[in-house]
Amino acid sequence: MSGSDTRSGTRLTRRLIQLYAGLVLYGASSALLVLAGLGLEPWGVLHQGLSERSGVSIGLVSIAVGAVVLLLWIPLRQRPGLGTVSNVVVVGLAMDGTLAVLPAPDGLVARIALLAAGIVLNGAATGLYIAARFGPGPRDGLMTGLHRATGRSLRLMRTAVEVAVVVSGFLLGGSIGLGTVAYALAIGPLAQFFLRVFAVPAPAGGSAPVADRSPGRAILPR
Image (cartoon, rainbow, N blue to C red):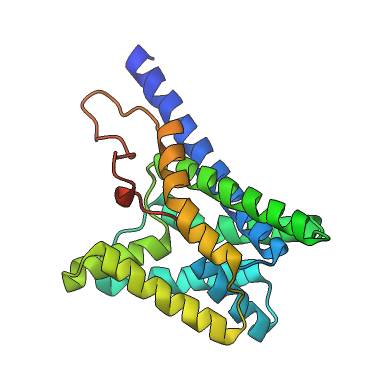
């Protein structure tokens, strides 16, 4: 095996490890936000609301919603990658697993600490997952697909979708609070920082790095 083949194999192994480590940590971090009970990220609000109404675990609801969103890619002519399909299953399973083994915290200080840990861990998980370059999450692919189909800005599509998701989730009984605001303010800078930390060097003549100087270029998995 040539040196280039060895480097290519090592790079692929690292990317796969980052992909699945990132997805597991993303599910675990989402579970920490649930346990903190101070408000969830936008899609988490919807998942929690549907879980409350249906009696199904929030992790399984996340999987079901991800699968439905992925079906919406078809008319938008979006192509899923390994990371897209893995996101649908792994995040929900990791979320339910974490909720099964960790107890709810006692006291406001412990809940705030758990919230902070969940947000930071979510940022790290996002950096790991996106830097692996195996395709966007199903929810972000929906936003980019709507952006291409409508000609509207990605920022507008993202805002419109997430506002609709938060409102729907809240009406269903999902939790909105300090955590929702803190997540919205912190996740962009955190994700951009960890994208640079976990960036996988592109092969010679390959594509540009995932992390760009502008945080607005980062697409977050949900």
